[in-house]
Image: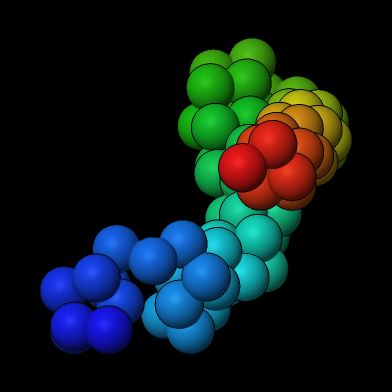
Length: 78
């Protein structure tokens, strides 16, 4: 097996490592992004601290779970 074909192989170590690291980081990153959007778009203009951040965190968590499920089900189809 040549090095180029190993890089294209779907089951190579680095491809699996990349997928696992993406799955691990998606949820905290989306929750942090949701909190920041909630804070800057709702809390500051409407002066309703902490509710914008709470709503944004839950929306971010939902988006993160959706993305994780999408990644995991997409891997099974291959």
